[in-house]
Image (cartoon, rainbow, N blue to C red; front, side, top):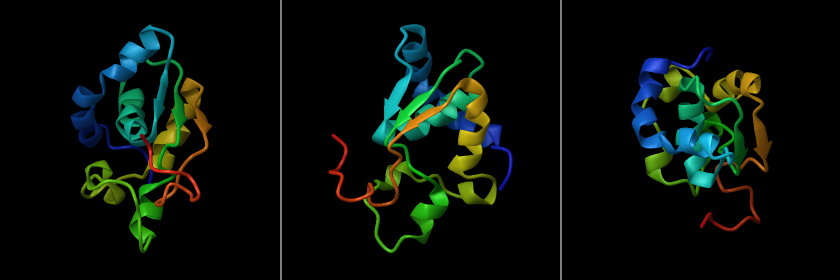
Length: 116
């Protein structure tokens, strides 16, 4: 693992401009499935100064190791574990006052319901 690969993650930035919008309007929070692209956007954006993630995926390693999972295929990034994992991003985001609320594993840490 190691440093996040910014070139690969940059593909997500276009989908995640809401992270900058949220920061601008004082509500830098992303939850569930949206926490993944928000994580990448926050890593890439110098504008984002604070990040709060609720129900963010613990790691792609956890997801890849699980026999079953409830995260959608769209949340999986091909080849990402060859470069970095989400905990690498979370460590980087500690410099941006990262706050994680109830992180979720592959099955949303039962008994949680599916995200709405």
